[in-house]
Image (cartoon, rainbow, N blue to C red; front, side, top):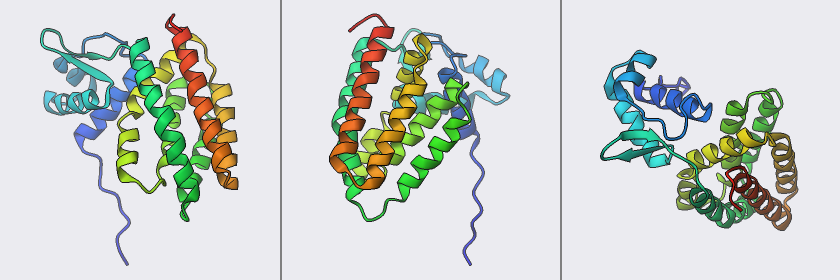
Amino acid sequence: MPSTFSLPASRTEVVLEEIRRGILARELVPGQQLVEAELAARLGVSKTPVREALKVLSNTGLVTFSPYKGASVCVVDAELARSVYDVRMVLEPEALRRAIRSSDRTAFDEAAQVLKEASGAEADQTTLSLLNRRFHRALYAGCGNPLMVSMLDDLRDRAALITVVGWDANPSWRKEWNEHKAVLAAAKKGDEDGAAELLRAHIAAFLDHVLEAIGEE
C-alpha cells in the first residue's frame, strides 16, 4: 500500500504563507516597505526564507520591487483592478464551462467544502479572502487545460488583495458568497450557460464595487 503521509512544508513555504496572510489581513498595508531583517525577526527565521518568499510574492503580485526602496506591499489602483478582472471575466467563465463538460467534477466537491468552511468564518474577512481563492480555483481546476489553470492561478493573489480592498470599504461578502452558491448550484446541474453567466456577472459586479471603493468608476 502506498504511503499517504505529507511532507512537511519548507521554511520558505511557511514564511510565504505568513507574509501572504499578513498582507491580506492588512497587518502589512499597501505601500509599506518589507524589510527582510524586520520580517525575519518577526517570524523567527533567517533572512534567506524571507528573501525567497518575497520573490515568490513578487511573481504573484502581492509584492513589488523598486531599485531604491526594495520590496513593498502592492498598492491596488483602478488600472490593476481592471486588468486583473478583465482577464478573469474572459477566462474563468470559459474554464467553468469546460469543467462542467468534464466527466470528472470532483473539483466541485472542493467548492462545496469551501462554502461550508466560509459559513463558519463570516466575521474574518482575511480567512474569507483566502477561501474565496480556493472556491474560484475549484470552479476552474477541472477545465482540462493546464495552461488556462496556470494563467488563472497566477492571478489569485492579486485577486485576493483586490477583494480585501473592496471588503475594507464595504463588507459585501454575504452578497458575494450567496452568488458563489448560485454559481455552484448551476454548475452541479450541468447548466454551462447559466453558470458561466452567473460567474461573469459576479466578477463584473465586484469590479464595480472595488472601483467605487477606490474612488474611480
